[in-house]
Amino acid sequence: MRPPALPGACPGASFRPAFGALLLFAVPLATLPAQAPAVPPTPEVASSVPAALDLAATLALARRAGPLQRVATAREQVGLGRVREGAQWLNPTIEWRRENLGSPLQPDIFATLYVPMDVSGRRLALRGAAAAGRQRVAGDAAAERRDGELAVARAWLRAASAQGALDIAQRQYAALREIAEVDAARLREGLVAEAVGLRTSLEADRARVALVAARSEAAQARAQIARLLSMTDAELPPLAALAAPALPSPPDSAAVQTLALRVRPDVQAREAAVLEAQRRLAAEQRGVFGDLQLQGGTKETGGFMTGQIGLAMPFPLFNRNRGARQRVAGELSEARVLRDDLRLAVGGSVAAAWHTYAEVRAAAADAATFDARGREIARIARVSYREGHATLTELLDAERAAADAMLAHLRWAADAWLARLELERAIGARLDADGPLDLPVLSSLLTPGS
Image (cartoon, rainbow, N blue to C red):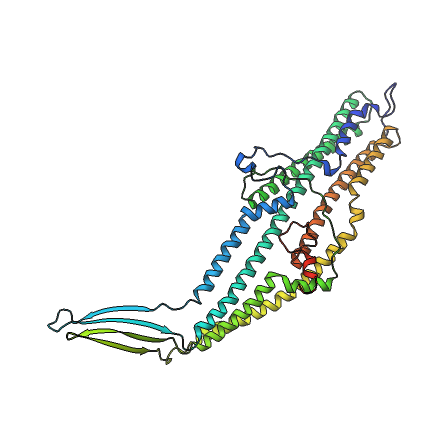
């Protein structure tokens, strides 16, 4: 049932206040302002963070003070310390000893130096293993830092998407509430059917419930990104509006798989772990005989000063270092399995990320118009309703379609960012110099001789 026109007015003229609110709802997503924090940031924080956090600024802050980066640095220090512990030279021992105390005999006084000697070469082999161990620790730390960056990027995309969805929900609720108030007044005047008033009231209530959910999601996402930046919610500045990233053309899948196996730090770490285990096994095989100990010093006895020299070596009668050899042999087998498994995982992840990125890039031309097409649908529906060619139900359906289109555009922008970031993380390089991740540029790695 179409609402009757008021005398002396064009059809739908009394709905013009509602149309003003609906036009607010149709504002392009890129122009929506971000929600301000409840409490302004302190001067100290404001001097170190930008006015609006985009993805690049967020990652820069996370590199400086984020807990994930600091944990990775701390774990790197722990790993380097453990590597150094097993490769240090043994210290010499100095002994001073006095004998014949409490007896009528003249005292014997000894001054002896004990110097361990690595005649089997075990310590040298352990130092060689330590060099590979440092490469392993550095590779693991670099991979952990990159995973931390990707976690921060995901959190920012979630927060920016939630903020954009909240802006859409707020405008939708304002528009539908305005329509419901106008219809309620017209219903009291008997100008519209009761079903029309009930429908607009229901739609406004549904929009209000959706707004509550959107506000809760935005608050949770904002708290998460604040934690990853070591800030409170009050210190976190507003988030920049989410916009789709540039999607440069990637190399073919075979080239990026080969590159990933060559440059990814986690692959290098697993290769270094195999080399480290091999050198440790060689060291423990030499450890059947323990360190030789050369002794030399002086002895004062009977009033005469004499010299002394000695040689000590543990005899491998009960302990032939079999336990250490078995342990390191198992570590070598495990390191080889983990290396081979990671190489397979890298190949699969690179292929999946490459295909996902290619599909997202192919759909970019259509997905980038979701917002504009949704607003055009709403505009046409309003014109038709104003001219009496569309019902209120058709108008509300068009407005819902516009909101869905804007949300779809928002989701696609986040998905496009994730597709690019996941591909760059899988390859171990940025597609171009404008990428926000802390990775080398792809073109510099694909040049001959690089």
